[in-house]
Image (cartoon, rainbow, N blue to C red):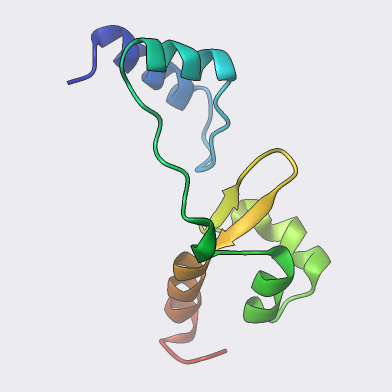
Length: 103
């Protein structure tokens, strides 16, 4: 069970945003590690698609994928400038919108 200080820090980070994607300040991660709370593992990069790969699967242009990335639930920000898309999440999202049919 996490320490109360860790829980309070995590709650403050969650309360600071309404987005599904959260950028955590390095200082907060350092504090959590010091409290014995490890951050979640990074996704396996083999399961991630580049912007051109995602654009092809979504049948959208590359600029449109960049513009809509914040709206997609399967977007993964590896860093400030590295954007990828979870392949399984993209497939599920497409299946939900197409009734299981290929677009």
